[in-house]
Amino acid sequence: MKLKRLLPCAALLACAPALAQEHSLPDAPHILVRGHAEVDVVPDRFTIHLRITDTDPSPGKARAQVEQHVNALLKSIDSHHAMAKLTRASSLSIGDASRYENGRTVHVGTEVDRRVTATFDRLDDLRRFISDLPSSSHVLVQSTDVARSDRSRIRQKLRRQAIANSRQAARHLAKAYGMRIRGVYSISEVAPNFAYGIQAGQWGSGTSPMEQTAMSTPPAPPAPPAASTTSHIPTQLRVGTITFRQNMYAVYLIAPDDKAH
Image (tube, rainbow, N blue to C red; front, side, top):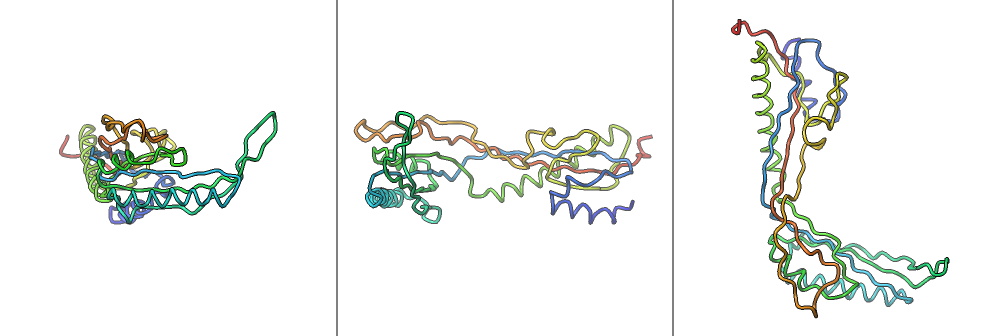
């Protein structure tokens, strides 16, 4: 098979990774390699997810209490320099609230809640915001997470590095067996699943072409005075570094290297 006939196949597989799971191996001699690249970066986006809830026999009172807390939170979010474009507040969620007593369900009122998400570009701003949250069982911190604003740029850079890594690995492997690379049969970001035993998810650290994980945890900020301690605040905020990983899987066509003999 000529190389010029193979290139469209490679382009197709690169554009549609899902199809890479279904392609067959070439009849010609070939090698299958994985190119890998990763980098640790410091996060620059710090997000907090909050739940605001209240239960009352009167649906109107429960709704009013939730709205009051949400309005106060939004003002605090602005005053602590959160990124306005990334602040989100859900619509009201209203449902029945009940509990079990003596083997039967007892209605206790109407539960109303809303979810608020805020993102900061400075960790210190998020910490101050948490310290200023009201001491109330109605305002709950669900979780915090970190991210990078330039994820796409990092991904593109790692993809190039992973491709270069796969080429280098293929050349070294072919040379060790007295062969040379004569073309590319297929390229994919998805781990292949071929009949001869390479299974998706068993090659490398995972099935995802890119993973990001908080790697370390700094000391928690000083606790606020007891009078203003907020319920359900996480004792530590994850920051440290984020690890981005990228894999590229390539099938290279090979031929005997006359120079090696």
